[in-house]
Image (cartoon, rainbow, N blue to C red; front, side):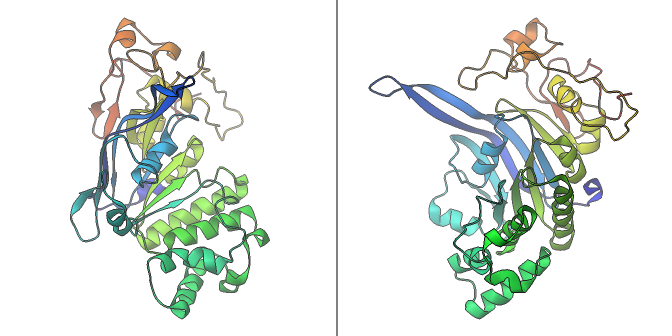
Amino acid sequence: MTEEVQTNGQKLLEVKDLRKFFPFSRGLIKRVRGNVKAVDGVSFDVNEGETLGLVGETGCGKTTTARCVIRAIDPTSGQILFRTADGPVVDMVGMDRRQLRAIRREMQMVFQDPFSSLNPRMTLFDIVSEPLYNYRTGNRSEREDRVGELLQLVGLRPEYMRRFPHAFSGGQRQRIGIARALALSPRLILADEPVSALDVSVQAQVLNLLSELQAQLGLTYIFVAHDLSVVRHISNRVVVMYVGQVVETAATHELFTAPKHPYTEALLSAVPVADPRARTERIVLRGDAPNPANPPTGCYFHPRCSYAQDICRTKTPVAEEISPGHLVACHRAQELELKGVEQVK
């Protein structure tokens, strides 16, 4: 289990009050009428050598958060503090393209769809060596040697480098994507649902590969997913998001066994239990998730929460640390006794 991975305790990345709003317009003159609050005040940190899971239902803003962190899209406001290999901590928000180019050697991304993320007209050598070429790293012979090493590292044969992506299965294509992400020896990998498009048996192989690479290369992961079973297997800590906000952050074991936010409890009730004799009760949330362009007052979750009280409808909860490392944004976190996966009979 990844929970046993030892970290050095140093923060590699710290995200503070991150926001990303997308304006929308209406009418003939296209006047801006409001903003879709895709990411609304998200804060978390990532320790060097750990895997941080970023979870939530579709549309909660987890992928947008990851893309803001790597500056694939520009955040509206907030801070993204990254500790570089040279030592100084830099704020990536507000950096120009030249400054970002230097930082991006140290952070790379693995995309969700291994079929659309690889150019079908490029060979494996061209795909994996493209980061090396862009950063003027080595001559062609040296790049060929590096690509061969990377392919071996992810479980593929070096002689495959002359082939095109269509010759490979989905799992093999994702291994190619991982090799490309490792080309510049980054310290931080953002994995955006890297196994959701794969068969279950192949998912396990790719997850085990990611764990092995982390132990071998000292990598740090931000793992975006909606499958809590996968997150439980690979993550040290988990951040739960709902409508662009963080509602709970905790160590993986503590979050799965003793959740403190009703939304987390509802997510965990959908996690399959390995014991076929076990009977679990699924918590079905009423209604739909709020519109991020017009979220409700108070706690965003209160229209769907069976524990909601008057204060939940009027006052926005602030994240509080109820135990070491366990932060919850819920007015009733201290009094509620919620069910985790281990507690379900």
